[in-house]
Length: 293
Image 1: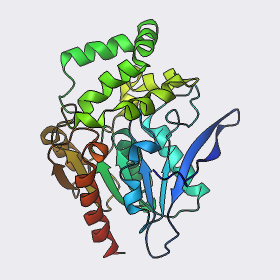
Image 2: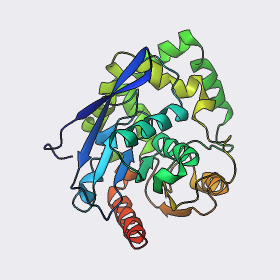
Image 3: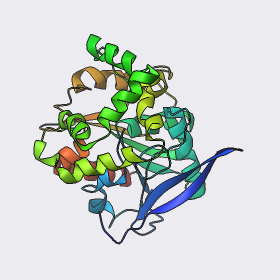
Image 4: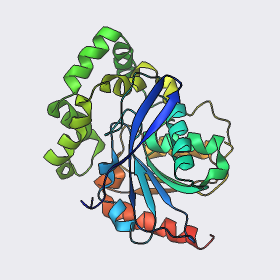
């Protein structure tokens, strides 16, 4: 990511007694004839996880990216984290920047948050580009995973596991299965993902998906959902946690008109794992969208 792009922050007033400092960045020039892009990272991620993608598009598009509350350099208060909360953050950001419509490029949890927002505010979304979105899991939760999440939900054991996870070794072990290209899981990436875990309150956000998994699911949305705009699913073929042959059909029940593209030799973190192939597909999608603007 360019060193000339500076961090910006806004104070999000969640309630009369609670506020959070949210980090975001802007790239490129205002382009009245083009819908701006909003990049949203996945669980445990941050703006920098897009460092192989955003620079490729900043010369042709106005781009925004932000750290979701509880992650990256955004504040990590003790609140109930959920897709609903992240969708409220998207809504707040669009109001702050006076954006009537955006194209969202989201990864994993960020993609699920974008779809949740689009369901409730369809007029504010020009298009959704969802990279290995989470939120629908089919029968991929095997018995051991269910047992593990049950243990994490116990406050005492959960805190112990968080402490064991919140270090470079734990982060490396967590990132490795999400990459096909293991060379990408280098010291820079590991340190990037480790730093936010040391922040005050990190245990609240990082433990939320396992303590309250239903808050991070899309199962309860109407099928099909309220959002009818252009939608593109871009998936890594080697994603073992969310295998495309199982999960894409579920998303196409939620968004029947969604196009699906499977990229070989890429796992869950597709945009970083196979950034050249992902950027090529993203460019094709954006060009296609421009022809109808």
